[in-house]
Image (cartoon, rainbow, N blue to C red; front, side, top):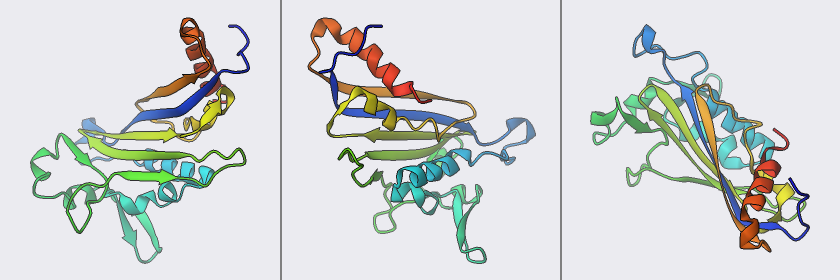
Length: 202
């Protein structure tokens, strides 16, 4: 690869992580939940702690698979609660899929969880959305991290959450950027530099 030309930058970079965690061991019956089934959600909380994102820090409060334990004054993983909180409209589909975010009590509608952090020392403000699901015997996580600003390619690695989030079944990263100061003939080289910058610290 050639050295990255100085003027190359990325505008409005957005990175989506799709991660999949086995929830239950089907060889032991439908109700047998894996010991590490809640790993994705615990890792999201850790990501919130690391990046100082309040919504992720308090994610357990938003998820149907956690219930509040007044003895410990904290939320505990309780997978049996998922089906108990399902609405009548959701109950016919519980074997297929379920949104894990608690419904809005006022409207009984699903809520999209959006978040942001304070600006960092470079003036960049991390923003994003998270969508946790149960699909058959698997937990699925769709989390997007983005900057609205134009950034240096080296800063793309700050979007990558895979240092905090590792799923048991697998995960996929999807990066979108708008090239800045890049000739059309150099798009492939630009894309290669973006990928190299994105994964350099993982």
